[in-house]
View 1 (cartoon, rainbow, N blue to C red):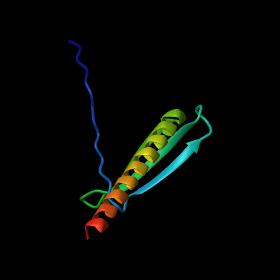
View 2: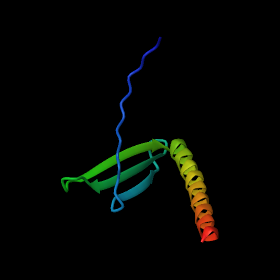
View 3: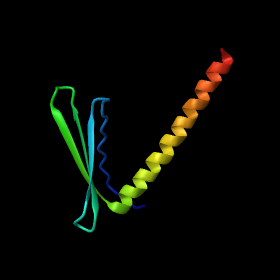
View 4: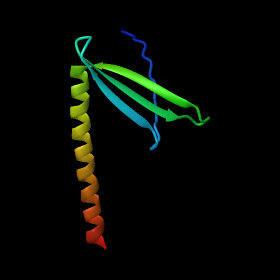
Length: 85
């Protein structure tokens, strides 16, 4: 049996959170993502990530695909509700 350690950081942002993205020209290209939000104590928390361009592109593709599927599902549910009325 092979055992590995993992660490998980879970972040839940509010509707008032901020996000910014910057695509770097140096360091073989990278994408910097900053997320910020106030925690329950009212303290501003800032999270910074730097991703290789290829990983960022893959993430964007998955986000677009998943959001499109979500929007389509919500539209179908709204249509079903209207038809039931």
